[in-house]
Amino acid sequence: MRYESQRVAMPYFIFALILFAGQIVFGLVLGLQYVVGDFLFPEIPFNVARMVHTNLLIVWLLFGFMGATYYLVPEEAQTELYSPLLAWILFWVFAVAGTLTILGYLFVDYATLADVTMNKLLPTMGREFLEQPTITKIGIAIVAVGFLFNILMTALKGRKTVVNIVLITGLVGLAALWLFSFYNPSNLTLDKYFWWFVVHLWVEGVWELIMGAILAYVLIKITGVDREVIEKWLYVIIAMALISGIIGTGHHFFWIGPPEYWLWLGSVFSAIEPLPFFMMVLFAFNMINRRRRNHPNKAAMLWAMGTAVMAFLGAGVWGFLHTLAPVNYYTHGSQITAAHGHMAFYGAYVMIVLTIISYAMPIMRGRPYGNSNTAQVLEMWGFWLMTISMVFITLFLTGAGILQVWLQRIPESGQALSFMATQDHISLFYWMRFVAGCFFLSGLAVYFGSFFIKGQASPSEEVRGPATEDA
Amino acid sequence: MAERFTKSMARNIYLGGSAFFVLLFLALTFDTQSRAMPERDNRDQITEQVVRGKHVWEENNCIGCHTLMGEGAYFAPELANVFDRRGAGDSAVFKSFMNAWMNAMPTNVPGRRQMPQFNLTDQEIEDLAEFLEWTSKIDDNNWPPNIEG
Image 1 (spheres, rainbow over the protein chains, first blue to last red):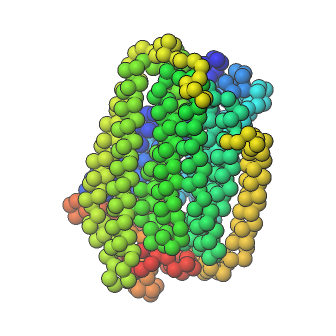
Image 2 (cartoon, rainbow over the protein chains, first blue to last red):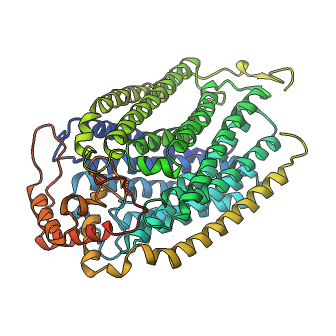
Image 3 (spheres, each protein chain N blue to C red):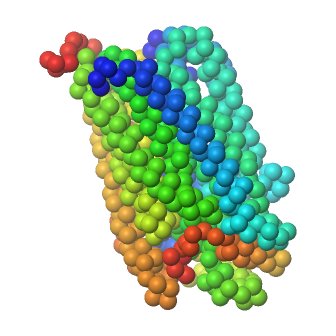
């Protein structure tokens, strides 16, 4: 860590991980409610638990992105952060607002929450992932503006690297697109159309810039490969992400009102969407093969490779599985969607945040070469337990989805099973998904455990010079 | 990557490509919104009641369990076509169904998925029914494939 102010990333990472744990606990509640329908009813109905599960995910990923930004922007710009104090203030504002919102979901009836937060004045609540009270949405916008100001002032006074430019472009896009969360027309088709400007253009647009920039930064650090090479890759990857992803929004416009040409546009462009993720796999493995140093933090390298592979599988392959309009006609809004959502979010965004945490956290804790071998081994156990569990969660949900489509969607009206009857038929898959979820939680516990092991990697493990003859 | 392919070429593909597709997306959005959607979303049928019904839908977080046009949670049935499924396409039948259904919740059958009691007024239930009826008439390229949603 070359600049003292990078340390402000620490509270962001720690709080992100705490929220991550909360997200998983509520994920298990939901998983159980799928098979034991009245579990925790009426104290925590499904909709409340789901809101907590998805909102915690979004908020902790935002904390992770902010922590990553505070850590890497000063180092890339070769200057101290413009205002560590502002970063601390915004941390507390966001942490308190986020916590209050979650507690509001849990302890106040949603209609009452809408009432006391005066949703009537500017109705924005009650839409998937955008359930936050309007006041929280305004708070998020204010935090984003303060954060961007701090980061821009830092980046502008220092060295302008491609990693910084791409990361900041992604963050500005994230903040700008958030404004669509305030647009909630009474015409449902318009509401849905512009809702995707937040949801799709975040996760299949600007977030990919953030992910690419963080991955590039970590690869520069742990492989020692020339920055020029890495930056060229980064440009090509984000070019493909935006070229495919922007019109790829069309795959959400198939069945919500927009005209038929979106069936073609959405299908064709989203068929290209796996490409940037595939290139990330090539990128990560190529850079690691051509490494000029053997960084002793092997866990960080594992996360970097893991995020590329899992993002490709989850966002790329599982996305493509159901993205062509004739397929999506049957799979839209089924458990196939849930399967894709789980692996895509885990692979692309959870794992990229855990990658930067794995790299940066030991350095901030005074262990420049990484954690001790024991801690790294434990962290890697956490990696494999969580990742393999997520693979199984995805496979079981895919199985559930295929059977659901077969029983409920494909037969003619009259022959098809009803939604609830279908759910009964696929409950075995839900049970298996729940078991896989329990393994995920155990992986998370092991991962957390790795933070409590003392000691650090020795610099002597660092082998400088070409790792392979042709590098 | 080959040396002939330089970083500035990569950057230009990124800048040019994303600028082009952003503009194309905006143009398509303009066409969709100004030309196509008014023909397809029966917006002239959006009454005061439909608007109020949408607020009832939102303020009770219905999307947290149900899907509407395939979007939402996958815990409870699709509701964009519930007007056809439960009301047989008849407003009066659908309203009386909605009233009976909303007031019967939760069923409290042990082990079954439970829908909360939202304590809606008769007026709110009627507004919600109007909203769902309007939604069922949007031209959505014939989704879902059958009546079960």
